[in-house]
Length: 192
Image (tube, rainbow, N blue to C red):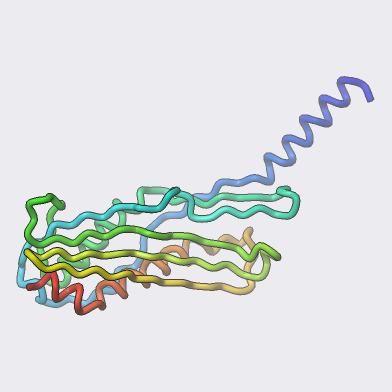
């Protein structure tokens, strides 16, 4: 094989492999299933939301022999989006929110522990699992309360190319938020 044909073959192979590798972005906008109430009686709560995940990546998948692969990341900062959602949820339940500081006598700290999507490794057409885990800690004067809120969703059968991740990612975050705002001990801790 001539050097020209060898170089052309090498470039063609690289382009084919690069074409099979994709980066997808999902818009993070979970529904906020919170009912209005006056539980907070207009008391002020400092709010802090942090992302404790080791990576911003939501999912990655590799086909057989790494020929096809993709990665899924959020379009925006998840902590910023959830801060706005949780602040709205607190306002709907009668609290006034402000940025967290060490001087807050009432505070809610929320950590994003997990937001992950995984395809069945044996066959990508079999299904996808999406999970979200949030940890909330209420601090109210000398009292504290901590809870973890998990939501796991599965869809079968599905192929990676159909890309249901945005819907499932937002639904899993929405489910975790619903569990957090349904935790009476957490809300009562904030309302004391």
